[in-house]
Length: 304
Image 1 (spheres, rainbow, N blue to C red):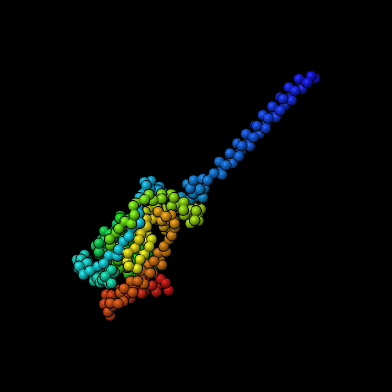
Image 2: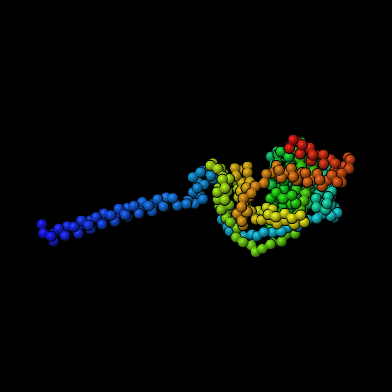
């Protein structure tokens, strides 16, 4: 075989080897790229779906809010006069910022009650009822909870902005206590809030959600960010995320951190504070003494 032929064969062999190695390189690169794609972070929707965590349709619009500061509303004798005009009740103001009122005739809450029927009863007995919205019937304390609204959004679990309607053993409203938030001031320019799905993702990343959970509702509102002894409070916009119609989580819609409030503990604190307010002016056989006695009984039955 001539050298020229040998040289040609060697060149062809090396060329074939180069092509083979190049093809091998491409195949390995393709496999590597596929691996990268397979291990790319999935969306939160995909991760929830993989764990059978369901949620209803979420609000699509973008929201803008900011921190707000709110002062405590002070009551006076004119407010008491308005209450007497609303319904037959004996009302008392304590420390200028707390109302306790006993109805002359208890009002029955029907077994097949609706939010509308409870709100109608509430509107006929409370001071500035349009400021509040019905939240829940807590069966352990047998009390109807109304939270105050600010800037058309509920302020969740704040002692200074709520009404509690206490029911007797026949599920009749017998008396109530009321506090009220006053002037509101925006503390900064409004900013875009995190989206509801981002709030859900925060819960997922913090292991608050588990396989099979159902995210029942997602609502926007306010929650206490900083309380001051002066009575002024700072509220942050939040997403309230209800899981399995049982547990509520609150996600700060500007800063993204998570917190929750235990309703039983909150009510215990409110009732304790109510007792502290009222026992200063108590008199034997008075409506105040009757309400105080009932509040103490509730605490004893519930907390042991």
